[in-house]
Length: 199
Length: 199
DNA sequence: GATATCATACCAACCGGTCGGTTTTCTTTA
DNA sequence: TAAAGAAAACCGACCGGTTGGTATGATATC
Image 1 (cartoon, each protein chain N blue to C red):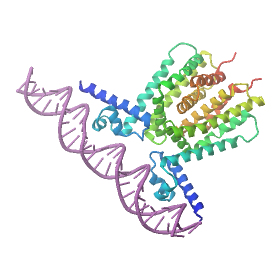
Image 2 (image 1 turned 90 degrees about the horizontal axis):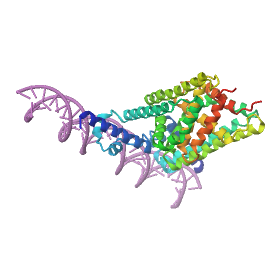
Image 3 (image 1 turned 180 degrees about the vertical axis):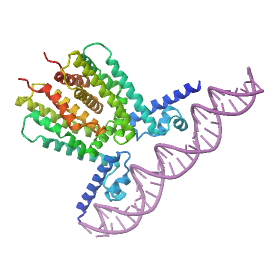
Image 4 (image 1 turned 180 degrees about the horizontal axis):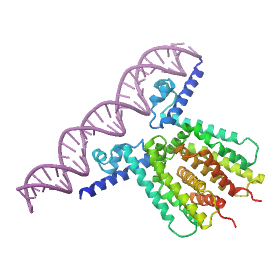
C-alpha cells in the first residue's frame, strides 16, 4: 500500500477504536494501550499519529460533530414550510437515539471533559454555537415565509436548542424509559404552537 | 468524644471533602489520597468508613440529589399562580448557576458515570423521575386553577424538564457566554405562552 | 482487656508517554 | 532498471509516577 494510504488507514483505525472504547468505558478509564489493542496497532504507531491522548480526543470531537452537523443540514434540504421541517426533524429523534447511542454517549464524555478543560471547552463550544445558529436561521426563515410569528429568532433558537439537548440527555440516560420519538414530537408541537403565526 | 460521634464526624468530613474534590477535578481524576488530605484523615480511616471509592461516590449521589429535591420543593411553597411560579423559578436560574457551579459539575459527572454503570443509572434515574413528577404536578395544578390550558400534563412537564436540563447543561458549559438568567426567563416565557389559557 | 477507630507503610497494577531500533515505501543516482 | 540511501511508518520494551487498595500496628473508648 502507498505510504499515504497506509498512514490514513491506521489513523482511521485508531480513531474508530478510540471512539468505541471511549463510548464504552469513558475517556479517563480508557487507556492508550487498550485503544492500540482494539486498533491492532502498536503504541509507537499511536504516538506517531497523535501527539497525546487528548489530541486524539479533540480530533474525535471535531469529526463527530461535523458529522452531526451534516446530518442536520440534510434534513434541512427538503422544501416544505419551517414548522413541518421542524416536526420532521423531531420525528427522526428516535432513530438517532437508537442507532447512534454509543456516539451520543461520547458527547456526554465531551461535555464532562469540556467543563474542566479549556481547550476542549472551546472545541465543543464552537460546534455547539453552529447548532444554535442552525436553529436561529431556521426560525428567521419561518418568520420570513410567514409561517412563524415574528418572535426573537435568538430566543426561539435557544428554546429549540435547549429542548433538543435536554431530550437527548434524557434519552441517553433512560433509553427504554419512554418512546422518545413520540415524546420529542409532542414536545416540539407544544413549543411550535407558541411560535406559529395565528390568523 | 464518644466513639459514635467521632465516627460520624469523620465520615461526614470525608464525604464533604470528596464532594469538593470530585466537583473540582472529576471522579476519575480525584485520588483517594487527595480526598483524605482534604478531609485531614488517613487512608486507613477512609477505608474503614467506605468500602471503595465508588461506594463513596454513590453515597454522594444520594445525598446531593436529595438536597436538590428539597430545594425544589421549597420554591414550590409560595402561593401565586402557576405561571408566575414557573417564571419565578426561571429567575433563580442564574443564581443557582453561579453559586452552585461545582455541584452542578458533579451532576455532569453523575450523569456520565450513570450512562455506563447500572447502579449509578438507577440512582440518578429515580431522582430524575422525582424531578419530572414535580413539573407534572405543577402543570396539573395550573390546569386545575385555570391559568393553563388543558394540555397533557405529562407532555408539558416533559417540555419544562427538557428545557431546564438543556439550559443547565449549556450554562455549565459556557457560564459567561450569555446572561443565562435572562435566557432562561425568555425561553420560559415562550414555552409558557403555548400553555397559557387564552381568553 | 476487648473492640472500635484511625495511622503508617507498603504493594501490585496501571498509566501516559518515550525511545532505540526495525520494516516498509519513496527517491535518487548511476 | 536496479542498487542504495533517505524518509516515513511502525514496533514493543521500558520509565517515572500514580493509583486504589491492604496489612499491620497504635490509640482511644467501652
